[in-house]
Image 1 (cartoon, rainbow, N blue to C red):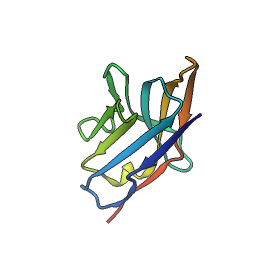
Image 2: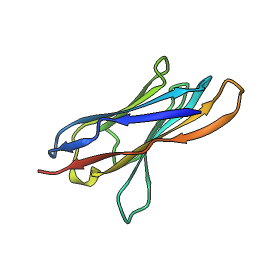
Image 3: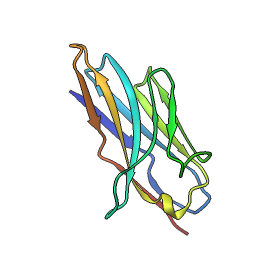
Image 4: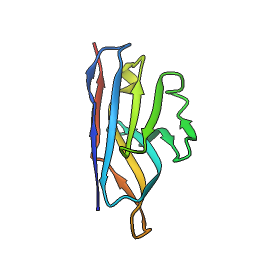
Length: 120
């Protein structure tokens, strides 16, 4: 089994910054994709950014130039640095990771979400 712990959400003023973290632990041989999504009540879930094990990056157009995704493979952790935040970034942010465990079984695990509120 694998556990995900998300942290870093909170209330920030427009123009401010936050850094989200998502740490995985447990039966992990390797983690392939690490991904951040966000969701606002009543709206569809939106892909924010993802990073492959080899370092390939992908961003939603709405966050390009403002958000940076990174990972620390030694810590099984993915980060999302969010700068120049605006009220439209208000959402619950979820991470998921694609884990291959020591039995070579691939499984996707989702975090419980961390709320980001951008408001003055």
